[in-house]
Length: 476
Image 1 (spheres, rainbow, N blue to C red):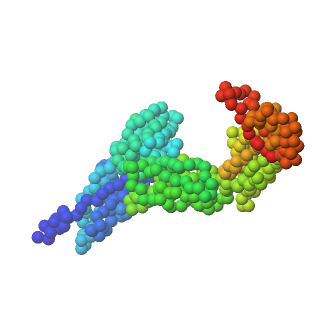
Image 2: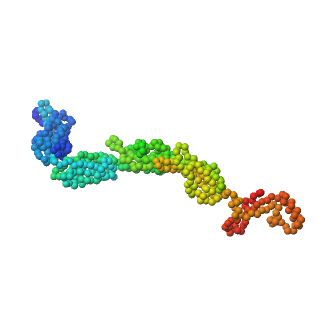
Image 3: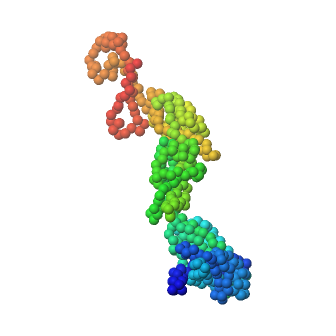
């Protein structure tokens, strides 16, 4: 009855799980053996032994042995394959009851050198590529290597120098982005070499794209920043940060900011060139994962608009006008420039006095004319001149200096008096000489003199030739 009960108890024990790391070693290398026992039993000790019947160290369920120790224990020479299993014992009264045996694992021991695995990048996206280089000893003429992706498919045979995309790595390791892919490599030369050291490749979500509605604003104007994230990922937050400050700020993925806010965020003063990047975060296994940075986008923030002040808007050719480009007191002005619409720029000073003739020459116009003028100033920043916005345009009207003088070449002048009958078409030739003389004397005493200007174009039109026009009747 007691023997039957003992058999039932023994049959109820679960077998342990044996793990070996690594599976291929050299004589001087070490291997770790772990006889993992069920948590439901109180284990007295563990025992490892080879299939040849040789017992390894006992007592501890976790042991580390060298290749030499395994060869000696199993009475083998290089190259060799040592097959190991384990069991544990449970003390039942005065009896140590053994568990069923674990599965058998094979440890290869040879003289082949371990390869060296290198990567040209430790962090990529799905569309980026990484080159894996399994560097084998120069004494071993192999061109094909085996790459083992932890948590993934069985080892894959590739060229010892292999380039893979992030998407291919995800497929080989049976993972989704974002992920960390652990990889080792080995080679075959009659026997399998030891595995290389393990390296990890981080595969990030796709890079966002940063767009802006404009790249040139003033402090009072606004720009909309859009950190465009891929539709394939669930985004938690977007972050914008200044390249200069390297400090991020969590805001909406689409955000409108004024020039003044950008300057405050980046601790700069206008004029300034603000370089911005963005990234986003996604949730992964209860934590947050950061995307790669977007490419840098630059916004130029100009100083405020100047004010153009003129002391008069109506002059002649010989008159002068004073132009003042009034700049903000908050900026250190390098130069001012006045600009004539449809003309050129002039002056390096912010206060300028010009004659009407000078303005006409610069505007390539003749009097009478309207000349539109604006102004702009520059601020020197890092050896560069940053221009402000243009001021509002002002119109200067420039007349002829002396209308009568200017018109003399094209105007015939007749002098009449109000008593001049010779020009009067209603006068009669029947008046007597004495009456004419008397009337002449009387009229001369009260007469007023008038000039009549007859405008004659230099190239008169046909209609003008038929009708003489009188203008500018002026009393003297």
